[in-house]
Image (tube, rainbow, N blue to C red; front, side, top):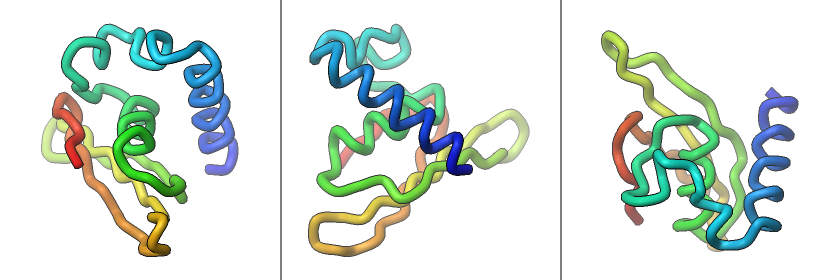
Length: 92
């Protein structure tokens, strides 16, 4: 799992260095914020929730439904677990 988180962090750093336009250049998130991959779920959570991502994983839902689970440590030192269904938007 540490490799996956390292890859996610590297992707996020590249997106931040690319600037605001580069961060949402993917067609799945560019226009409406819809999440289709685990990396997109982590990016949206980090953009909307101050704090730090502790873990991120993908669950298989019913049928072909995918659910992304992202745990964060908020600035208030609370651990929050967010569940995001594939194809939905992340809102605060």
